[in-house]
Every structure is written in C-alpha cells, then in structure tokens.
Length: 55
Image (cartoon, rainbow, N blue to C red; front, side):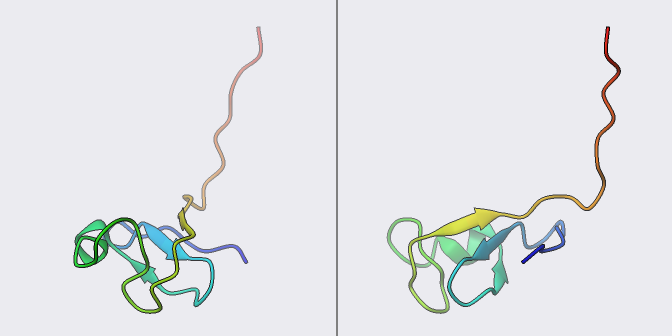
C-alpha cells in the first residue's frame, strides 16, 4: 500500500486504510483511528522523492 499524502489528511490507518487529519484523531482519547478505533496509524509520505547530493 503506497498512500498519497494530502495536506489536509496526513495520517492513514493501517487496518481500514482511511486517511484522516490530526483534528479528526483528537475526537478520541489517545492516538487512534476515528473510524475503526485501531491504534496503529502511519504518517502519509509525499509522492516526490528527494535528491541528495553526495560529497
């Protein structure tokens, strides 16, 4: 699963796969998915890769 990062929904639940924002997550106590109440979430990554120059 390679989720796309959006500015308004930076978190993704690992169980149900839904994206949500930090404001949605604050409805429940602690860090949980507001849809399925699962505790394992991940921060979505941006689709662009970073280039770093070597020395």
